[in-house]
Length: 147
Image (cartoon, rainbow, N blue to C red):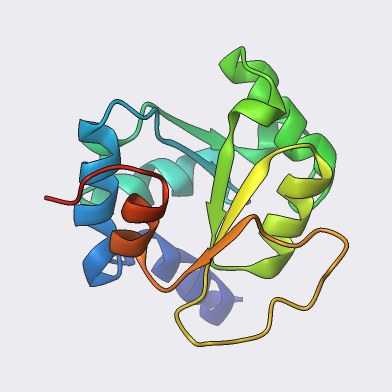
């Protein structure tokens, strides 16, 4: 059991991929509202975001605990929009996991798939609206000027 706890706790000490912070800052500077929706529990999520050094970039951090369901169940994404007081169609959900984009798309969100490894998305029914290779490209595709 200790090995499992050590592995799960390591999630709290992940650093963002190099381009993520600059890309998020560009999006934030352009007035976009940035929100985390994670399958992590609230305590671990709070510690992880703080450790990553990105806490000041996010307007809100939401754990799936609020929905009582894990992603990619569409109720999770709908609950997040309800908590934010917005409609799913007002969201561009960004993920590097196809399953996450598929769940968000099924819930009515627009989606951006960050494909760092050149993998096939694998779902034509809920295809991502845009596929980018990193967050710098994401900022460009979303129509904002990079720094």
